[in-house]
Length: 168
Ligand SMILES: [Fe+2]
Ligand SMILES: [Fe+2]
Image (tube, rainbow, N blue to C red; front, side):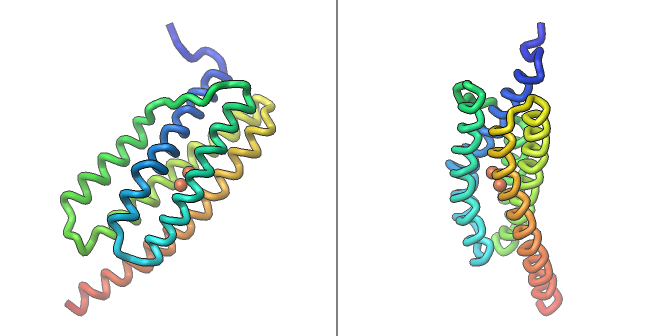
């Protein structure tokens, strides 16, 4: 027997999935990254995104409330995969290259969140849940802006590291 049989149930399941991701980012993953990185612009960007991520958690909880539901998390296997991959990369990589590893991990995570919010806002729209669409759009906008910033920093760091290599 399928547990999820209606579009609304599927929406709530996926909402629980992104709530799991946002809480894990706010409580564990972003503070950990902030502790790892050396580059100041990257670190202050992550600190800013940690503040935003706390708002993302509250917004997703508000989406549940707007539907008359209790916020409930679903363990997100996609995010756990990204997290495991990152931890393994950090173990295997020289300390001078950790910022490059972390900027890649940040970009992967933002792309994952963007895909999740695009899909959630589409489902909310289909269900006629306008308040939910508005809240999801607010998070989506932050994720897209953050991805652009991360990509800019990634380009600069890649060029700097390549130059260091060339002059070494
Ligand atoms: Fe987020
Ligand atoms: Fe994010």
